[in-house]
Amino acid sequence: MKFTFDRDAMLKEIAIAQEIIATKNALSILSNVLFIAEANTLTIKATDIKVNFETKIPVDIDEEGTTTVFCDKFISILNSLPSGDIEFNQTDITVQIKPISKKVQFKLKSMASDKFPEFSSAENVPYFEIPVNEFKDMITQTIFAVSDDETRFFMNGIYFEKKEDNLVLVATDGRRLAYVSKPLCQGIADFTPAIVPPKVLNIILKRAPNEGMIQLAIVEKMIFVKFGNYQFTSVLIDGQFPNYNRVIPESQANSFEVEKRDLQEALHRVGLLIDKKAQRIYFALTPGVLTITSQESEIGAALEEIPCKYDGDEITIALNYSYIEEPMKVVDADRLCFEFTEAMKAVTLRPEPASDYFHIIMPMQME
Image 1 (tube, rainbow, N blue to C red):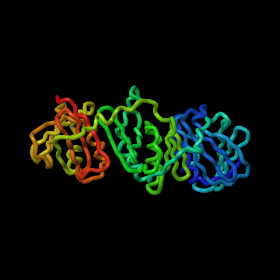
Image 2 (cartoon, rainbow, N blue to C red; image 1 turned 90 degrees about the vertical axis):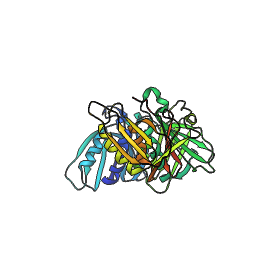
Image 3 (cartoon, rainbow, N blue to C red; image 1 turned 90 degrees about the horizontal axis):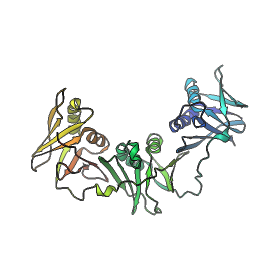
């Protein structure tokens, strides 16, 4: 097996492969990237068993073949070399990597490609297309709310559902919920609701362009994704996602509005003295004023008042600092609206004016 490739083009693809690979054990085939050289095209594959990655790049092939190499060392070699053409030459189990412009060469041991796991076939999969910028926005609005509690594995991903012609994404950790719905599925056949692990979605956020379309398919226990020359597949999370509709209030009796920038700056200052473990802050509302206070601790406490649009009764609500800060980062609006009914019932955070997404936050106990 022998071919010549462009260093920069290869490095771009191998960097994605490295994100997929979950182990750096040189003795494991899952630490390796698979190369298939044929018809002046190099097919590159990587997997951690649950998430698969495949792409193709043009190369100059002198001898077709298939092999695998240790991805971690291969990408380190590429990073050490200047831009330009590099020769890849395999003899038996040894791979020689030699740049054309430098008198240097590296030798890597390869592993037989027949040990590399088979990928699920993406042929005849019922893909549907949606604008990639819309899809990335939906992921951004929800992925931070995914639970990391492995004992509640059914909340370790984002729930995908088709409702009429809308694509709905929901994430929750049991104490907060992120919801977004966009009309992206007109004319698309129904698919079974699915829980998608965040790994493949994070890669889409990082690697997918901001223009054009992305192709998705949810079939049985897999999600298939295509954009550009990339193909990804991921095993879905097998479990029953919570009935999120029960968490979303049908109506809220009260609301207040604030400038997003005012709240962000106040939270940053008050957050300097919060208890990092409890993360409890207090929102005290009086007509026209929101007072934000950190929980009293051995270090001290902080308090700040900001103007708000509110004319209801005085009330204090205890909230988790992160559950306010994180959704605020992704709310694309200058003003925020908080809707509530009682101090211990769910609070709705949404942009003002309302959009196609919102966030539900469960209050904390007062202390």
